[in-house]
Length: 306
Image 1 (cartoon, one colour):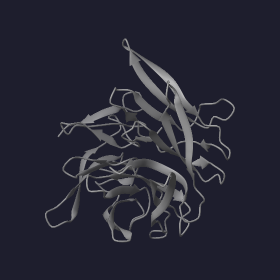
Image 2 (cartoon, rainbow, N blue to C red):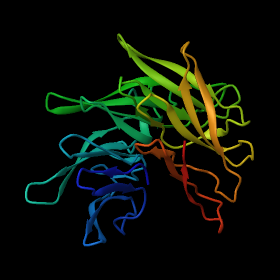
Image 3 (cartoon, one colour):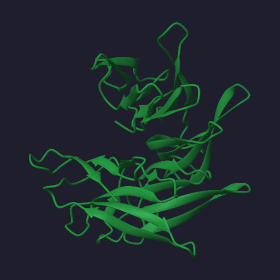
């Protein structure tokens, strides 16, 4: 399950990577609606795989201004390289599913993974784990023009210090810059945080932090979160003071350099391996989950306060 969407009415939407139609178990998109204190779940679409549909939606969802939902599947489509799909509220109720793009594994990428982001113009950004110019994945842009959809690779990943980087999706700030993490790569092959800035004719990539496996953590995973001041928050699933994982914050200094601050190092009893990033509220409190640790060893829900 990737990042969720909460609409203006408080309804919750998310995509399951597996489950759904019992003949395929290829995943589904569902909606939770609260009525009288009870939450009711509705399946908006169950994926069937094959050339006409997607399979295994790993990237979560984004919503546009008209209430349409967009997501990506890691497999499926005519090339089995993954898809971009749209779910639109139908007149009279229900939802209409449309596969708006199928990846080809050539210049656009293949097998999209990680969180998606959208800008004010309605463009959607994400990452693929394969394909692209060098075969190691892309950061892609999905744009709508002339009645159709186009996917463009705005950045092509390479081997980094001999390691395939395993990108984890992107987040976007108020200026339109993109931020992402790679689970591997970097000088120590323990992952990086990077920024993509649009310039004339291309996007410029800058590595903001290379993980060392010390107090900063190792192997960052999950989506990034950006606050109103432009600070970037994320999680690393190993290392830290207690060697169990970290929550970190990246802040731009006065001279333009980025500095990483470890906000919390997990010790096991308070959880470990926060694989899905963190969210932030209006007061600056961070919330997240871990896949392990805690009193019973099955993970925790945590809050970090400033």
